[in-house]
Length: 116
Image (tube, rainbow, N blue to C red; front, top):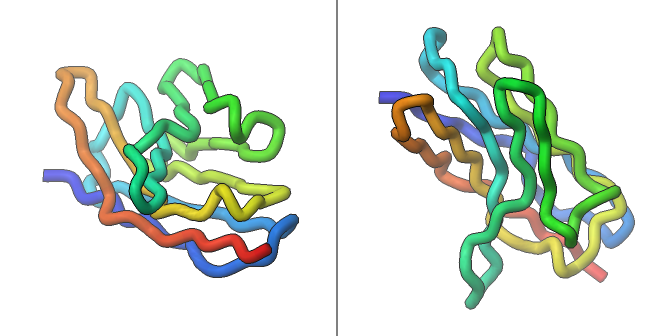
């Protein structure tokens, strides 16, 4: 079993920045991809940003140019640097990991609230 532990959420004013971190509990953990999703009240969970082991990253159109996903593979950690935050970025952000055999893991979520 792998646990994903997120941190870094909080309350920030519009235009501000936050950095989310997600650490996997198992040192031999070797995911194909790690990603950040978010879910706002009354909305479906959506992909925000993803980073594959091959170094490929992709982003939702709503965060391109503002958010950056990065990984430290030897520490099983993925980050999400969020700049120029907007009130519509308010959501619970979840860390996600996809293993080579198709098994998926989710973190417990961290709340990000952007005030106008």
